[in-house]
Image (cartoon, rainbow, N blue to C red; front, top):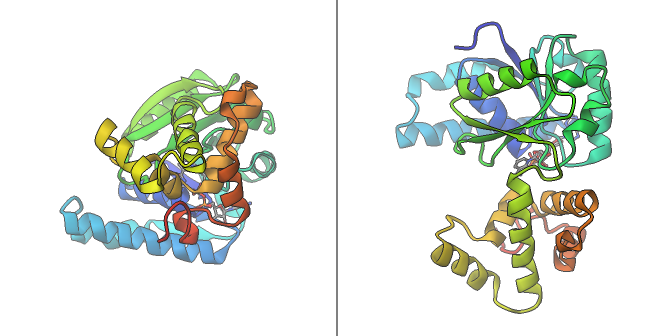
Length: 283
Ligand code: NAD
């Protein structure tokens, strides 16, 4: 069980609220921090409705609902991370924002706290270099939707210590996940393999090889994927997909990772997928 660990999650978006949910469900006290009060309110509402879904499915006893919710505090200031033994950052996929936040963590987090990032692609080594404790910085890459998906990709930066890695592997298991340790290269393993497929699906759409529905149906029925790549991109967020592809393209320097112009166009239009109710599909 949770012992003396306290968790802070920075960012209450789709990933942040899911991470807060799984830690609170496993008995940890969690503080969820977001600069946007609206995002915090939405994050809490999402956690409540996801708990209701688990209860309906019979995977969570109804009497645990209130206790789980009561373990989650919210805050709009980074000061609130002061008690945490593990800080998990899940803010917007933007390098400069992350670098600044990790610089700020040093001033606000306990000296002994582990600082984890849920980044999909940004270098853990570079993030860690922004802090005075690079050996305590690690990637803890949860999958979407967090309460449902089994995997945590645990990414070791160049300086990440064996102790930090062991602790994060242990904490991932304590919240019922299966951690897999990987090394720090652009996109790690998950997005190094997933995003080129998503990008190729967008090229197929742009070139008129098939409609969104036909591309997704080919991949669902032909490859047994539970979701087609375009529907998955809408779920992930097209801005996040583009940010990851830019990191792969810049970091690996190979033109095979160049983001499809149609993806850029959708992001420029503010069509970001489910979160804006419009992406490759309308919601
Ligand atoms: P999101 O847009 O849903 O949420 C991001 C949240 O960060 C927003 O609520 C925003 O208000 C908040 N934020 C921005 N700046 C902040 C700051 N300075 N302090 C505190 N909060 C701040 O994004 P998301 O989909 O939850 O993604 C978050 C991270 O998780 C990204 O790094 C993304 O790459 C990664 N990730 C996403 C997925 C996915 O499928 N969407 C999967 C795995 C990992």
